[in-house]
Length: 191
Image 1 (cartoon, rainbow, N blue to C red):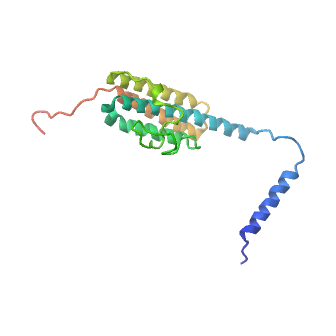
Image 2 (tube, helix red, strand yellow):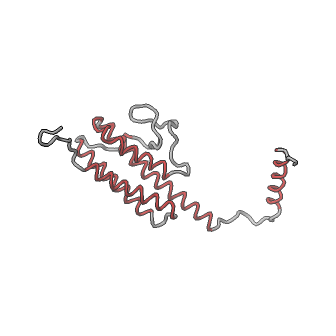
Image 3 (cartoon, one colour):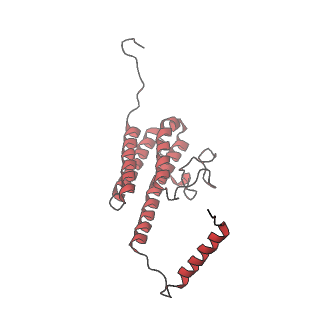
């Protein structure tokens, strides 16, 4: 069995590439085909969807920053939204964990799916009342879910399923944010 060296493969690849570049004549720039347009539309949709969830994540961070007592209650929902940002931006639109400029409100490196450095907590208004802050966050969850639902109309099938799942999770988050919190009690003296 004969093995071909890496240099020989690279040289052959370069020759094929050069032949392909010169054999077609000078027809000017290549016009994008239907596949190129569909790929560009999907990339734009992914960016818009990831940005919508990223903005929601920023709102979670602002509420936690303004109301640290809510941090434990919001942690699982925030983690879910961070996972949505990552899943929706699988084409690279989600910032990398600990990327320069992305820090959490505590100043430590931000977890995966954190808001982009161009967005700031300073621009998010958080009501002084914790209950009002939760209500505002629930509204943001509903608005983001609505945005994802509207995007279903133009999304390719696989991405549409992801958007539908994220929108459903957002609706559930909105419910959980507005549901009264109760503490378990023991009935009849049983414990």
